[in-house]
Amino acid sequence: HRKSIMHYLALCSYEDYLFGQVIDALEEQGELDNTMIIYTSDHGDYTAEHGLWCKGLPCFRGAYEIPLVIGGAGVENPGRTVDEFISLADFAPTFMELTETGCDRTFAGASIVPFLQDKVAEGWRDAIFTQSNGNEQYGIQRSVTTKEWKYVYNGFDYDELYDIINDPHEMHNLINDPRYKDKVKELCTMMWKFAKDRKDNCINPYIMVGFAPYGPQFAFA
Image (cartoon, rainbow, N blue to C red):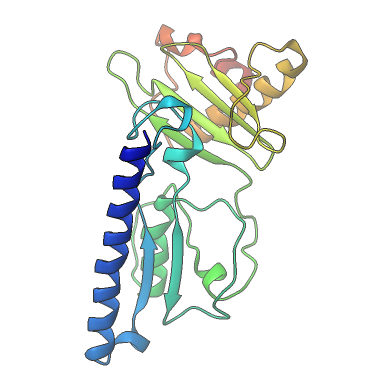
């Protein structure tokens, strides 16, 4: 594990070096002050966290919580930290707003331009949702995370519930603790409502959605 982590961090350092070359090239061409620079990733790597490597079906923060650093043109008051739920799905509507590009479709994400302008984004999301698709069961894994709680629906196995405040590393699964039954119901309801609002075809009569402790009927009763 130690040797593998060493190699992984060395690769990250090399990626930083290559990214620095891109920045240097922009500066040499006189375009640095006219460019918005976004440094991010598509996913993380567990690097032995929970005994895991790479990414995959587990839904821990190590794979889902990624860096996002934005600077350059269009960023007001740089150096700030925005403590809000932001998703890769927010990039498309952000780019469209920045380029004043119209579109006749809706997006699961939302523009983060207010944050770039050091403003408050009214009505911003208070939870973030993920999904990993299976074969015979559509959306074999789903999760909903708030600032305090994280619930993971695993259609293939037992579910997960974590107290993010007191257990930020997700080490103690509380799913079978009867004290949190109402919390599980609340988060399941949020999960199904989010799916319906995005016209997700998981809301169907297929029996597999009944594997959730609280199915869609609880959200739309």
